[in-house]
Length: 149
Image (cartoon, rainbow, N blue to C red; front, top):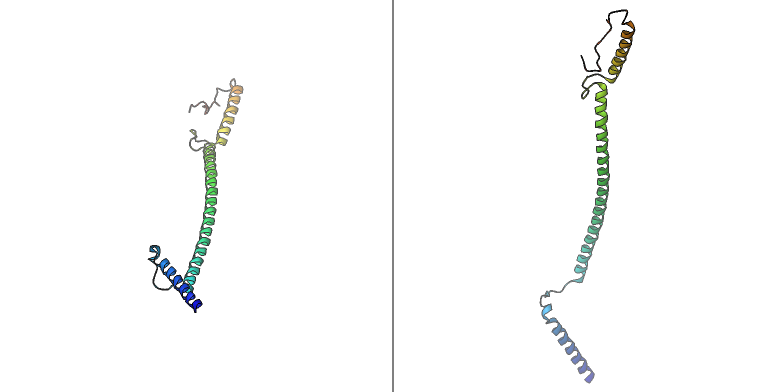
């Protein structure tokens, strides 16, 4: 009987210790209802699954950002190249317009016409030199290279 009484005293001491722990002010906000472990475990698993899904989505988004940044860098490089090509085009286009007889060509003559006119003028000058004594300079023409019309 003394052994039984000793067990009862140990039980009462253990209950008193547990009640003392539960009376701690830090534990005053604990709910009175018993928490069901199965429900809490299920909620925890759902939250963990949602976390893993969010982490996967974040990794996908980060990869997309890296891909877009790389594409943006390539586009910027291509834009720089295009601007350089545009500048070359402007120079070539202006030269083409000039050779074709368009502005800024002040004579409005194509290069071919200008060359042929210059050759013709040289031929006429040579003919005039040879024929100076024979005919009264009837083959003279105004020079287009000197600016007189």
